[in-house]
Amino acid sequence: MFDVIVAGGGPTGMMLASELRLHGVHVLVLEREAEPPPFVRSLGLHVRSIEVLDQRGLLERFLDNGTPYPIVPGAVRGFFAGLEKPAPAGLDTAHGYVLGIPQTLTDRLLADHAAEVGAEIRRGCPVVGLEQDDHGVTVHVGDGAAPLRARFVVGCDGGRSTVRKLLGVGFPGEPSRIDTLLGEMKVTASPADITEVMTEVRRTEKRFGIGPSGRPGVFRVVVPADGVAEDRSVPPTLEEFKQQLRAYAGTDFGVHSPRWLSRFGDATRQAERYRVGRVFLAGDAAHVHPPMGGQGLNLGIQDSFNLGWKLAAAVNGWAPEGLLDSYESERHPVAADVLDNTRAQMELTTNEPGPQAVRRLLAQLMDFDDVNRFLIEKVTAIGIRYDFGAGHSLLGRRLRDVRLEHGRLFELMRAGGGLLLDRTGRLSVDGWADRVDRVAGVGDELDVPAVLLRPDGHVAWVGEDQRTLDAALARWFGAEGQPTATTGARAAR
Image (tube, rainbow, N blue to C red):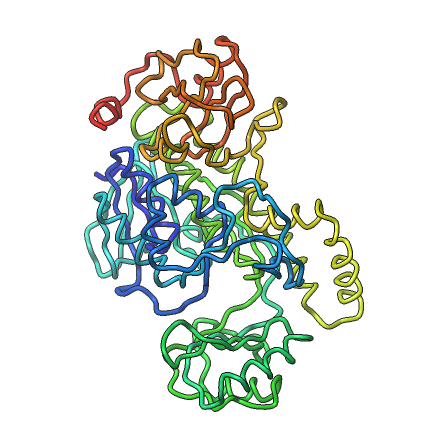
């Protein structure tokens, strides 16, 4: 019997598997496809995802395979609906950049890490059935293989999620109104001609683009489709690309020799529930939305970062009441906000007079630093604040990577436990020492007496009173002195 079965071996599933293994959880990943897809839907990682990778010691391998683009005035522009505004100065992060890296590399790096830390991965194993009882979940896979058994199951199996359908969870929202073609292919047009035409077309059509893919001689092409496909899983033809390129650009740029071709829509949907008993949903299985702002892959990774430690706490026997339910109560509103901001961005990219008038007005408003900063923090997910109740302005927010007297905060979070940063020198986590570490050498960058951080880096408590600290510790880390299955693992680390 497995502790957790993860259905879906994309970035959401592999990130979750790694988080679970950090806590010694026996995890199996079932991926329906025999080989990773070649499609490059996502081209980068936003600030919060970069922070997550740093908190787990993975960032260096991503930096070695990607290109940082600083979010500073005069550098990265066009975060929101492609509006060409310079970034505000001084974002609240030590990682003020977008990491350009194709999704194929992100998928491979996360899968490699999951395997390195001991996750079992089976490809070509689709989930076809589920039954759950008070003690676990029975999972049926294709090809007549024997059923599998796990204490918990998480569906990370994409927008057409089989797990979600088997659970009978509603997926309300809006169907696609427009399709977009996406592919990688060679061209005969010169780079100068391509740049000139693309610059002109994008003055009015923000869904059009053609540029280097990162592979010699191969270009990435994005162009609006002619109508909405009944079956989006059927790839478009090269001739369809040529027709649409000629319709929008007046030329097909001599495209030929495609590496891969695909299409995507702008459907906007969110699962009504993220949990049914012992089964959870994460990533695209829980929410789909237009790709505006490049938030989808990042949202899924961050779902896993929120769920992983909570699910591990349940497996290891110390999860306090309500901890598993907090996954939905925290992440459902975050995804709902992403759905809203991508809806808004899609409207602002149309050529209708009304949306264009709103676009011009928003462009003026973004000249105000607070407005510009608010929108960038929304897209990069560093503005998220979970509702932990009334209290200090830091409560519920993630804490940036502050410098400590000996090293950096994120370096101390790699074991996946909670952390008390104590400037008072007199607070204690003794009853929770197997789940929470205390750091007294905090330094001057933290301007509050003490903060308690959850394993995902969000601030669970701010203050200097032991009594209220104990209450926060019990709320997030279970009963004081409670023996846990992770005690020996943390001691070994």
